[in-house]
Length: 146
Image (tube, rainbow, N blue to C red; front, side, top):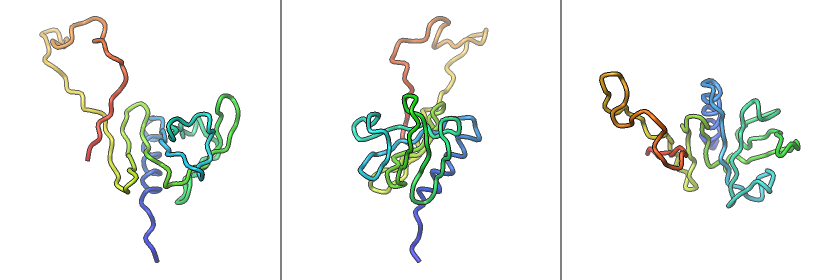
């Protein structure tokens, strides 16, 4: 008997963890000819899908594929993603998740930890005075932890 892949089990576990903690589970998919997704939303051979219970209908994550129906641009579409095509799963709000690299490696993804800076006597941060946040692109950044 051959050993089954751990990938579908890890995907299901992270999906449940996201759902239990109020995060929106997102799936990053490498699209190929076996992947059934709306092609007009594929960019550079990849698509990111919201697989939350609120965004999908009849979601199943089995050992071979992830299947569901969802609305894209107001139109209901059937989606089928082979397990091997899943590049990662993560919580949108927190950034925590897991990447499945093409070489078979699995990598945990965690956003960089936030550490409080020095505090003033009134509890304000000395590093960032009150006012608008520092300029930047405002996009969260992920750090790959090996």
